[in-house]
Length: 139
Ligand code: AMP
Image (tube, rainbow, N blue to C red; front, side):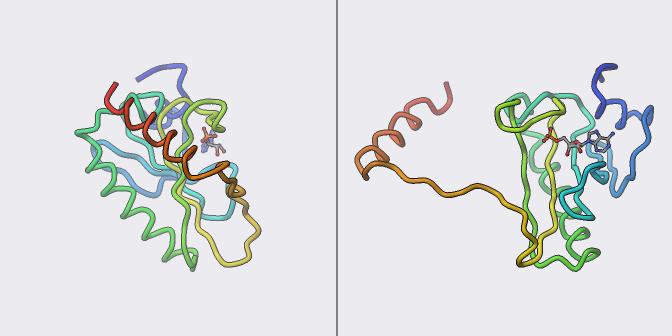
């Protein structure tokens, strides 16, 4: 728990939230600035700043909670699908540095944009980059 972290303070009950789910390790609550009504944040109660700090062995409990919450968000909002988004680093749009997943309920034509697809110069360039990333796995 970090006193300077707003999501730690929400997890400890120090700051109120619109809670939708809680278990021993996970809390889910509505985002204050929703992309669409029902936009929900799922956080581990234990502080970590982003995905790379999170103990992977705790991942399956967290994933189970995300599935339960996403199913309830979709059922409640009548969504046709949802985005599961997790930003890491300011450059990626992270503004709260306590690991969290956004569940955003979606319907066709709702106007929310994700990313515009780009391209590689050619297949060789694409394969070379894949090989470089592959060589850094586990480092
Ligand atoms: P990110 O930009 O991925 O770090 O997302 C942080 C999210 O937290 C934003 O969508 C904010 O609207 C949301 N947020 C910040 N403070 C609160 C709060 N006290 N309660 C609910 N959501 C919050």
